[in-house]
Length: 260
Image: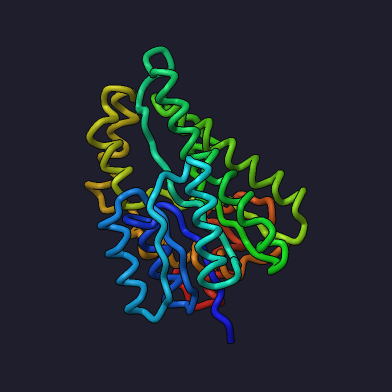
C-alpha cells in the first residue's frame, strides 16, 4: 500500500515537530519545511527512525519559491501529495496598533496567511486528484481579540476565512482550520518574556499562569490530533474551525485511540 504524503511547514520545533513525528508513526511520508536547517534535519532524522521517508525544504514559507519547491520536491520524490499542514506561524509584532511598524504587520501576514495560500495553490492539482486534505493551524485569537496581538489576530481570522472559501471552491478537497489551544512552544515563551510591554498586566499574567500551573498542552499530544486530521478528517467538516476541546472532534479522536 502506498503511504500518504504530507507537507508540513514550521516543522523544525514545537507543534510542527509533534505533527511530523505523529504522521511518521501513522505511516505517512513527509516533506518538511522550516527556516532552521539544523533543527529541520534533526526532526527529519527522528521521523525516519519511525519508518517515514522524509525530504526537507529549507526556506521561508512566505516566499512563493519556497512553496513551489515544497510541491516540486513531493512530486519528484513521491509522485503525489495527499495533505498539507500549514503550521508555520509567528506572533510578532507584540505591539499595540499605535506603536507597531507596518512592515512588522506585513511580515506577520506573509508568514501566517500568505504562506498557506501559496502552498495550497501549489499543491491543489494533487490535492484535487487525491481528494486530499488541508489543515490550517489557527488560534483562538482568530475569534477573540487580544490586546497587543493585532497582526496575529487579523492573520488568523483571515486564515479561517481562507479555509472556508477554499472548502467552497474546492469541493473535492477537505479543508479545516484547527485551534490547538495553549501549547508549550517557543511562541508561548515569547508571549511570557516579551508580552508585558504590549499587553495589559492582567492579560500578560494569564499567560504566566499557564506555565506556572502546568496548563500548557504538550506539542506531541496536539500533534497527534493534527496528524489524524491530515490523514482522515471527514469531508463534512470541510470549511470548519475545529477546537481541540470540542465535540464531535474529541469523540472522533477517541475512536482512533487518541486520549483527549
